[in-house]
Image 1 (cartoon, rainbow, N blue to C red):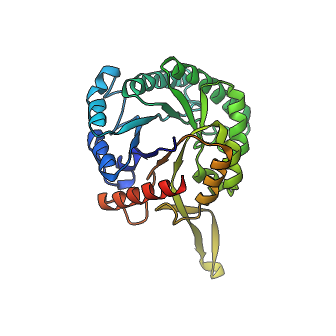
Image 2: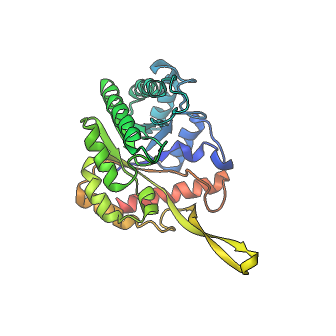
Image 3: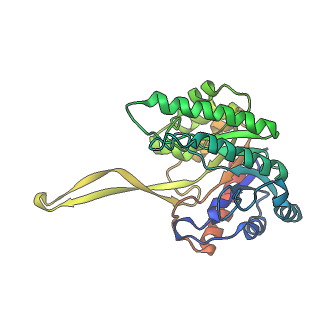
Length: 297
């Protein structure tokens, strides 16, 4: 395994960056030398609104096959704690249905994983309710994906379970053999976690990791009455090419190897990046990331 993957969010046009539609993105990934891709399951890429069933993705599969490009992962966008202000609306059920749609699309495209998130905190005084809602929904999503022969990959992105210890506890509570970890270093690096130890601990449960690298930009606010500056927390961060930021990627991959990681490695440009959002700059970052991933694995 350890296949390098380019995530289509890198060319989705967020933050004013250059945008490619789905087929041109596949052609871009192949031209950059990537053997596999992860497709964002929303516009401008693999939205179920535009591709409602397995038959509708025939052209995508044909193009990917022609390019000798594997569609490895379908990236869903979930928040299982959303909707607390409209309790009559079945937000969780709607998202489980979305995961079922993605599993059908993923099966037709030959993918292996459906990526999901957990949920954002809705009430800091009621941790248990948010946690339980995510556990219950993710367990059902794991069963849905299993029906299509795909793995449910849970990414440590949203608030619930984003901490290293909490993420392991979350997987234990979900307690479904088809729920696996898509455990990333960048989120826990922002918390100050030991990337080597975290990777070694989580590696046996992982099917994929997604890489990005950042620099911290401390923030200060001028206070004229004091003729001084006041620190503003937290610091801002800015994406930079892999290896140019503060993430200990060498330590993370050393932990993955010692822990027996057999999954794939994706790269994403999922925020503003040093050098700007031109196509040429995105290409340079993605090309550099491919070389860095191959060196790390």
